[in-house]
Length: 553
Image 1 (cartoon, rainbow, N blue to C red):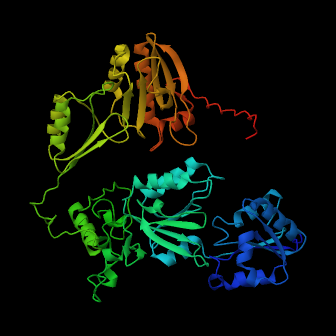
Image 2 (image 1 turned 90 degrees about the vertical axis):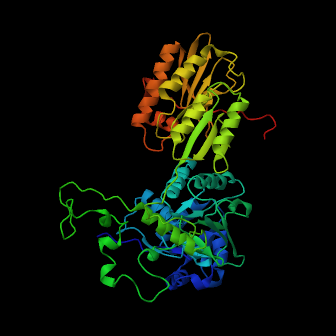
Image 3 (image 1 turned 90 degrees about the horizontal axis):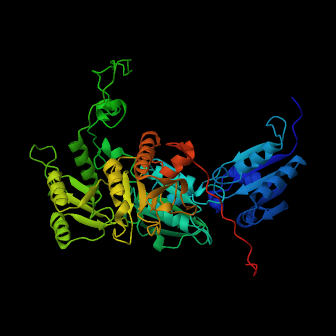
């Protein structure tokens, strides 16, 4: 084996910043180094450990130059400490140091030696100040989109929210990045309750340490910056006397307020004691032998005892003081009843914006005291009614001439905001489209914008599918995006289509998307991914060129 280069890189995570929380190896490595390389603030935090080492310090956003200088000095034969707060391998310098080395053709056996020294990451130090919020599955997400596209970050936030992870947000906000935390809250509120506990920890274990316990709904009312870590609880996280606690699940099998357990140690891991587990949900009669292995025969999954699970959940909430169950009927009783909530989107018509007094009165009567009425930006009213007879509700609404659509990831057609259908020559074709594909289930909510004349008041060309009627024919637009930092108009894929050709083309586009789109994939992303839909080829939206202003600003 060739001789190794004599220098060494010590990539050190020194924890939250206080010497008490720094590992012995981290202290030792700093002491034995010839050179310390780090961000200005980090060098200041460990100044009490420095002796006569050479110091290389830089400002924010100069991580690459620090890594390159550290590698250069190590290749000269020096011992170089590259310091990071928290853990060097969690949004720290470890990965970048390796990347710079690899670009230079580094090999572990012959190049400079590298030692990565772990430290306490922010998720751990901040959690300790809150209580025990990350006792169950958790993830970290950085909201900085300087190096990672925001769309990727948003997908990760949504995935973590859906999967019920406890989430630690790093780099949540800076002087210029202010919208990311707002968008994050919006995404999370789609999947989590407004009162979900949230901890805001600034400068953990440093001089200006500040801890705030709040809720998902109210977290933006507090100061959040680059030194803040945001920890968001999952569906079981609760607050007790100022502490944020996420249960591990022991209450399912153990009696926490008694020294005598109902289940003996040899019983606790048996399938019947864990009906929620994968193995516990498999029937031994359907292909599982007594040893627990699954044969090639078809395995049928037993249906869980939903009333029992519901009562278990209620008992946990009652123990936390969040709900009173004394007035509830016994869910295991044959007399117990469950009332469903019927939800439907109601409008006065595709292009009709006027509601009659009779229609409004009917909505109020159907909602009653226990129902809800919510207006949407799409000229629809969401009606939520507790009922066991949804068909009666449907009959009442349609009998009054109202148009109904399902709620969720379905096709919605919206036509002409302002003219009230006065230029109505094209409206019958919008109605035909609605009959064919309105309410169709698709991978992600899909809005089709329909402009009934060339004035295009509604702005259909910014929707994912846009239709504009002019001079007896139609122009078709695909792939628009009307929100977000990369919002853009749709691509015109056809013009001068006859009404019949338009209806056929749009239906084919939508049905291909419904069949081939990935779960939760918006149409504009699907169109870009597959390249061709119903014979229409995708083209990237041109990037705007902004000329230099005469004033130079």
